[in-house]
Image (tube, rainbow, N blue to C red):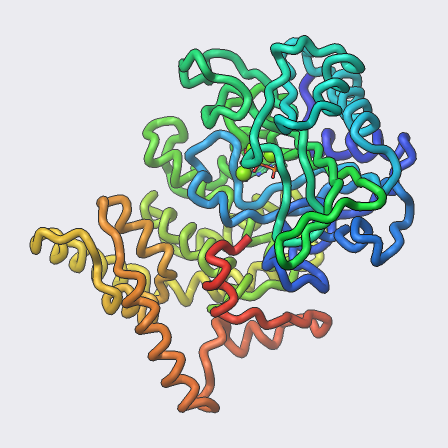
Length: 471
Ligand code: ATP
Ligand code: MG
Ligand code: MG
Ligand code: MG
């Protein structure tokens, strides 16, 4: 059965509504009242207070389709079939209502009766110590024992920072040997693209405190997450999430603008997919009120945009291509996310401004970096100096990660410690000269377009650095 991505989203929400779940639209990508996270990265995140019991949910059961950003997956984008930085997570939640059995039964009914997935291709996994989940799959659902994989903490124990967490049970779809790594040990959990993980059911039984101690919850909860793009990839029987209908049309716009062919070389395809993913991510981020900046989530936005701009250069594109590609994103996603349409002019303005800023320096920066790379190589070295990397950052607007990525393509690295020292020195200089107009990353022109309702919380660069991850 083939279904469009938008159709699957509706079918999911309708199904859970019929099972007495309260359905609500996606929350913002910006976490509200939660300083432990830069960007929402799972459907349960905006519902944290319901799980904690500090707020009462509208119903003991809820279902959402949540916009998510995972910058931690950025290096996989365009490389694996299944990772994006921006994706939508379908989820059903139970706040002290049904538990493991209910969650697995509902999920099974949805994928086998509504989506009509072939049962013999479905492979559940459980946390290796979770006998309850194992028995539900074997005895209630009727999956043969050898098709239930026991996985360790890394795959099947879910937690982000502090708060609700617990063991999980995932569902994988076997896409067949053609997608496999060929290893006789290939099974769910293998890094290759044969067994595609598409749904994670988290059995939230614990609350983790600041000291890392797990406290059993009086009422255990259910939190599930199914990647909409992944289930669409399975339903549409395409190779990667980039060929899913709504994403494919953005990808086609990239290919058309670049005047290249998709499927010709690996390197080019990776760039095409990166641009496709990142332009979608930045469009949603700007729509949710995030501005390009040098700190926190604004820095994530800037980093994604500039990385996409560089890959556009690699494909030979010039001009404000990212701004132009926003139309393709709106066409696919506008009907489901009205704020994209409402803010169309604003989104384009913010992206265009940032794109123009970087355009003025990217070519110069790239040639300076290339010269530096030659110098490093001529000297028989492998590390670019922190001073050089800082100059690229400070004068040419190259996020450190971008410089690193370009260096890695040549098997080189950067002296990050020295980079950080330069950064600290510059902060000190800025502190002394405060008042002289700090670079906030946008022009007064764009600033005047800011809706008055947006209040952005300041999360300092130091916080960002100390967590390492921007998740
Ligand atoms: P993977 O192992 O493939 O990286 P995960 O175990 O990190 O996925 P979860 O944290 O369990 O993912 O998230 C729940 C679901 O969200 C996944 O089963 C998947 O369908 C989807 N998902 C997670 N990360 C991504 C991503 N980067 N892009 C698209 N979908 C994703
Ligand atoms: Mg992951
Ligand atoms: Mg996983
Ligand atoms: Mg998982």
